[in-house]
Image 1 (cartoon, rainbow, N blue to C red):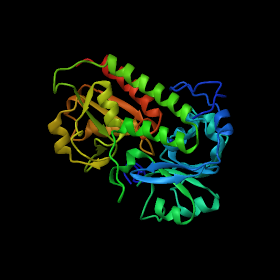
Image 2 (image 1 turned 60 degrees about the vertical axis):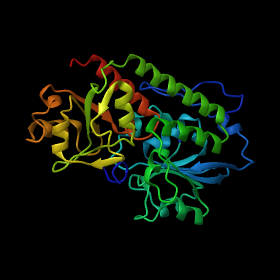
Image 3 (image 1 turned 30 degrees about the horizontal axis):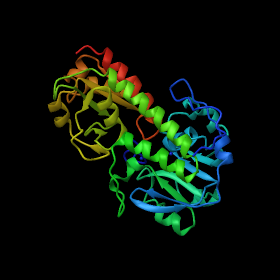
Image 4 (image 1 turned 135 degrees about the vertical axis):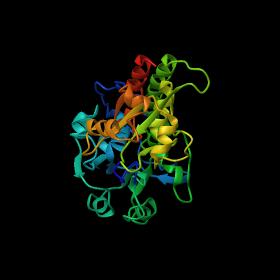
Length: 339
């Protein structure tokens, strides 16, 4: 995983005319509520565990697909000045909101930085802690506060945010972000509709998930990267909820971490029956699978011997509406799997 995101890696008025269509085949966006929303008042919303007073932003900068998708899903394209999209991310043309990306500026294909935000004359930045915001790179909510630039952090990334941590299960963190952004932009009704739709889709997958005896859910290992030691998903990132809701069990769900490094011995001991390949960057999923098939650490794993690999797109594994697309696909995969 590029260490910029997981590893070092958002009251609509009564004029709303069309509901957002979420799903892998595309998404429609209605900007009318965002344009007509009352922007004259300030509102207090939590940024992780810290109450922050916001005025309605007009020139947002969003980092990576998850941030942009949250804004677009709420019909807030008119409030987005531009996006920063590191090359590890899949092309925005593959997004359900490709038409919305086309309406805003591509500001950089590098990491988020303070200079970019200042040059863009942004009044609002959406990113995650240690996945966009970074002490080391000199761009944090505290620094932006001093510059008069508002900021919003993905709740999923608040797990270890200094002074104001917040620990929420990943799907609930996604819902919280949409609701909080809804309050900041005065589109609460739209946020309620989007969250309600996502929850219904999750419930539908859960209702069809394979039933297993206690402790007998299909063991799943997410392989992000790493040869000497694997990089994987702990309990505090979306793939953990994807696996669980689909009826499986993340073999590292006991790790109270986000994206984290483990060892091959622990993977082998857990005997995963399915391996999720996290697909991004310049190492295609096929190369990762080829490595696992050849490595003495993994070639005898049940999942490898049975060729039980599932490819999860990058934007279906970081915090954003597309998590539920990933869940629906993985849910079907598990239902069709012969154990």
